[in-house]
Image 1 (spheres, chains in turn yellow, red):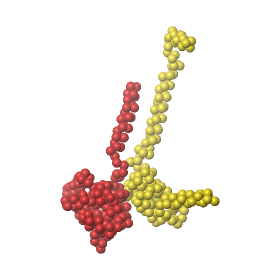
Image 2 (tube, helix red, strand yellow):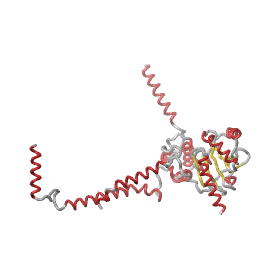
Image 3 (cartoon, helix red, strand yellow):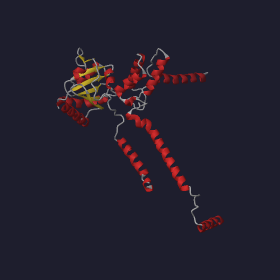
Image 4 (cartoon, one colour):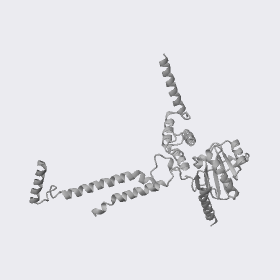
Amino acid sequence: MTRVLQHLVLIGLLWAGAVHATIEAYEFDDKATEERFQSLTAELRCPKCQNNNIADSNSPIASDLRGEVYRLVNDGASDEEVVDFMVTRYGEFVLYRPRVNEMTWVLWYGPFVLLGIGLLVVFLIARSRRRVGSPGVAGSDLAPEERERLEQLLEQDKKQ
Amino acid sequence: MRRYVLFLPLVIFLGIGFFLWRGLSIDPTELPSARLNQPFPAFEKASLTNPEQTLTPDDLKGQVALVNIWATWCPTCKEEHAFLNQLAQQGVTIYGINYKDEPVKAREWLKRYLDPYDKVVLDVDGKLGLDLGVYGAPETYVIDADGVIRYRHVGAVDARVWKDLKAVMEQVSSGEGA
């Protein structure tokens, strides 16, 4: 019986911790709005605590920004309008998924360019290898007497 | 030709080294203001020192000035306050924005530590701070005579920072004179 009680207390304590950890509770008219709120706050970066999104951060500024996102989403703003609102105030920095523009081309397409260069290098190396290797099998450019001496040496090694 | 390829790792190393070395002197917590070279965001807020007065961006126009975001809950604001007083004595125009603070405490603070501000805008709900892109007090902006934001500094203003701010202010006012 005490065992059960202990467990209950323990579970209760864990639960209390979880309740404490949740930040302000927002209520939504419908599921879709709530999902938009979640995905927007997950994709906007907190300007103060730079390795958090505003959904996860406890800093006052993140909580303000969550409030703004909530207000905008409830006012019927599109995702783009919410993102624009943040970018005009805090800059491109707040976007965890940067927009594609001249400034971020390197970021978005750079890896593909590097991949292309890598493939090109592999291709060129492979081609030049084939050309070098084509006249015959490696080692075949030894003269017959050299070959004989090589075989003798190899035989000697085996005996030892 | 073959031999030059041997230098490729060295070149790559130097390239990476250069960027990493550059990275050492970049402070990632210092963000460029998205509001740079834009007019001061619209607001209509009460004045801290004169509650009957309503302040708008027009009240900040007229000369090149500093706009300082501060609050009594912010320890760094206290740190820079004496220096702001010095600047005010030197004749620098400083406007204050009291950011997410309690007006009573803020008035008390100005009485106790002296008031370097020409005008103080009350931003209790933090909306103006949000429109400015403030992400931590204190912040200090340089605005020109038309209220356009020319520079932002995040963190305390001290003698070293003032050098930069002063340079910007001089540049802005000479640009306007020309």
